[in-house]
Length: 390
Image (cartoon, rainbow, N blue to C red):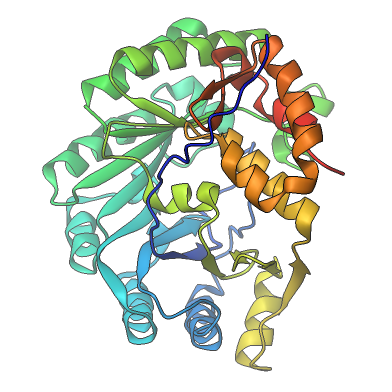
């Protein structure tokens, strides 16, 4: 089948820049997690001081346009005290203009959510919650070593729906050895029962150097079943599509008008500033990442008044590869017109591989956009790798 190109450029929003704050503390370590955090909260007050000072030092990293999104991730940002959150938001508003319609998200664990805290979070400006449910089944939560139980998973959603916070999403994990097909279907039933406008659903991945990797290596835990994970992913896609949700990124589903703006900025290549240990920043030409070590980060910021980071300049093949990787993960895909305009030297090889991917049924063309087919979504990383330039 011959691939032809319609160069009519599809229009995406051009939103304002984003701000990410990494809060590197958790009550306990989930077995599958490879994010940077500490289960000791001894340095939490000093960390907040350091975050505020880094905000000051990084004030001019991006242009002066308003912030279109603010995202507090981690770790567990819902562990921050009221005073700590108030200080952080005071600093943000002192140093940056925040768009009137900005999306302001707080990641929260179910066991930290109460009606009083929901009211306070709304008061400081949080208008979206991302809740780490992961599963509504006790066996899954125990196996993952989550800090909350199934009762708290249900209770927090009831409180959120009764609160004045207008937007929320939950995380669910599929592919766990403890999650049967029946349990996964029940998780989805519960999701729809609460009429949640957005879902982030992640396939369990065994990351190196995690507790889960060690448990599997020592024979203390079963490894995930790839076939079961595929079956659960296919069921997930069918169920969400039938219920009117946009599958707008490989792991994310939202009702129309309820897509996560901050994360969509990442996938669309919008500049953002990352604050905190391990946080990444991107300004279009360079990417930088902070040291992932709490005491050393605090020392550098508060005692030496410098940001401990590494930086790389994004050369042409790197920018091209990142565009392919992030764009293909979304329902908007990658633009033929943009490839020709910004990466013309790669266009011939790109077109040849695109032809093969189309013949294999892994991608399709919708006007100017190359998007993954259903089969392509099952091997998204592999499809992107075939289009990379080394």
